[in-house]
Image 1 (cartoon, rainbow, N blue to C red):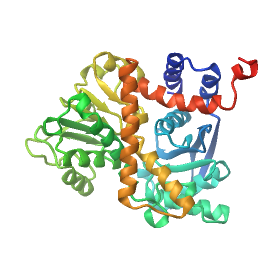
Image 2 (image 1 turned 90 degrees about the vertical axis):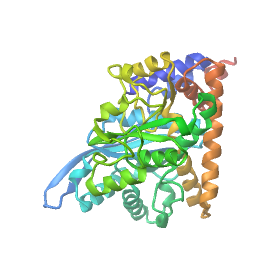
Image 3 (image 1 turned 135 degrees about the vertical axis):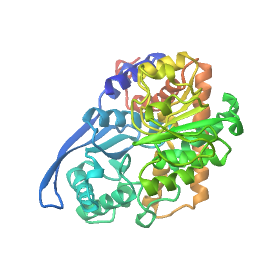
Image 4 (image 1 turned 180 degrees about the horizontal axis):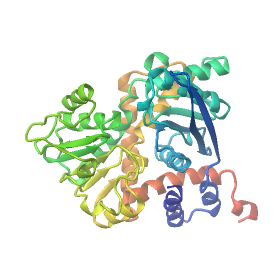
Length: 418
């Protein structure tokens, strides 16, 4: 995955005629640390879990990125996600570099006490590597507010002082910020709404399919449904549902809480169960991948019917499929823009923790909306001006800012006197 990500970087550098020093600095992570977490299980046995933390680049500020707990987590994935975070922070014009962390674990196999031990063990292993001025942690896949609270508590115990700004995505009572829970979904929502006129989208006549009905997918469905979009398809890890008449996201989430799956939830018409693969191929106007990486590949991209794809997951479209879809005239609102709402509000939480002054919900919401609309407009303008895909335009937009921070410290041209 990292090799493929570097291809996007190389393309952006070539198109902007960026100094080679910039590519040389960005093609590899600044530092990555791996560890083995040994956990005492409830039955008295011990289990080992592989864990990583990557600080990809810190030219624009301390690195920032989430921690994911998932059985498929790997070193390559963590470094690639940290690479994307570097660009995501630059796209949103935040004073952060990109970081990422993860543990290879199936949390569904752990009790709550085992999960707490694992969360605290992660911080114990990486405490010297992270911190409010070095590397700021946040929730990601299968880590939530309580996991982050355990981690924040452990970090404070290790450092001997309250350090809320070392982690974001915390519960409100632990120094979190209002608006963080739905920030990722709301950021993508603002990006899509801002482009409605340009894309000739009428919410009252448009259909949406959402892959992944966790926090991000659910809040995106709720926001779009409230604005008139018809949510015709929803899926989670166990499968999906389709109804051409649409679903009420609140009712589907209630069903999921009661049964553990979205399958079986009732829509407004003739509802049927489908697979995750089926959902990607539904006849809809907007497709929202909000689950895992590499869901759309060369094997299935020809069957994707959506005209607009809003990437709320990280890397849901393989590079070759991305090129094919773009050639076919699809508009892909890329992940480094579409899901930047989470880190945008995380930045506000970090600032509030450091200042001791907290903003109300309307101030946070207004800031997020202005940020997403400003950067979406800038990338859309680049897309049209340079005849690029939205993804290429987003990389160029972020790369310009990163390059400025690299070049400000001097490049070969400076030392050669050019």
